[in-house]
Image (cartoon, rainbow, N blue to C red; front, side, top):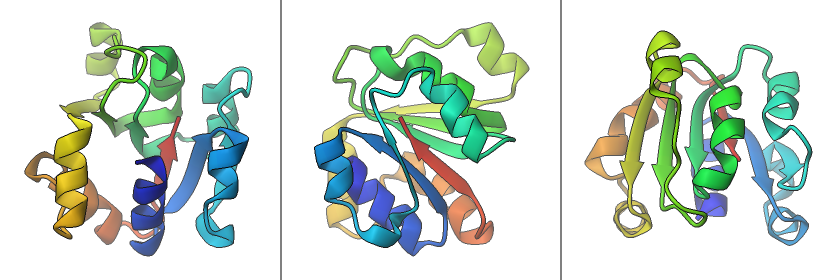
Length: 143
């Protein structure tokens, strides 16, 4: 799922920070952007080192295990899209999300994949695509 979103975001002109296992990262095209191992200590800080103001959009496919890194990686006023929850549902600090004006959306992996197969993101993700299209330098991170 992450490689599909990485390719989609790159094609739309986003700067991509892909996070995953070495095996998964090796399967991505060479021009995909930045790659970080999912084993990286303090992953959120590593993403911030690449995007000091934070990522405009963070797609999180893991859930509970990556929630802290996801929250640290997204910029104030940015968006987090959780798709599936391999490690359980992400629990974000609601006060922090509100104070930082972060938009959080959730979808099942099935609905996201269906949208990709039909060449259109699910309705709840359409604003993210519009953001990437209108801001060609958007940062997309996927912890």
